[in-house]
Length: 245
Image (cartoon, rainbow, N blue to C red; front, side, top):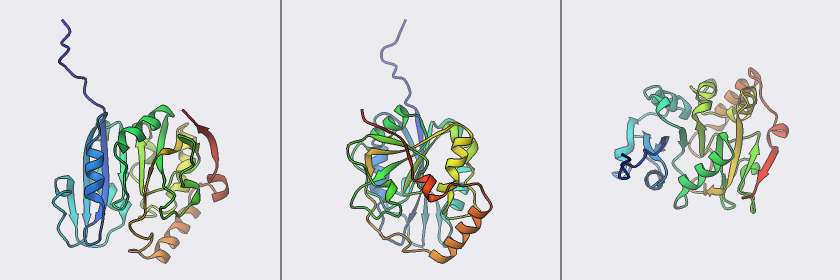
């Protein structure tokens, strides 16, 4: 006999993030907003980077404390190798300096699922700091299939992409340049990439490149790209399809 009281388990999402404990950050807000999902079972693992203790609101989600400067993607690889990712439908990688709208995760992943994006990011709001204008929100559309997904401040990977994108390539330990190599990997394995415009995030708490050495990371990116197949900016900043519901 069917038991109507048994509720099917929600699909699982893993959130992996790094926050700067010595700097003003929005990690408590981000973790609360993501935890409020109604459609997904969300597990969060954050790394505290800095000498200050974790904020009490983010402490329950803090898996590790690192008190010395360390590159983001190196830390993420250390975190993820301790987790069985097969248990999770999506991996969300987040920085600590974005403002998320209420209900963000459910809205965002619904559109990621609808358009079958194995690698995706939310667009940035118009008032955000924006490194690549290509990722700024396009008004009037829900999402677009692209050849570019930025390494931050938030992106998602579907489980179909784990074997091809993980562990992250530490030749560029801050991740710079990955977003020009990723489309080559995605197309090789017939995976779609995209930007979700109907669930944008605001990235305006801190100016980019405020707390790390631009020259060192730019040199690492040039060396990294020189040794790997990748797209040029001209080829990467290209919309393959746009979608309106």
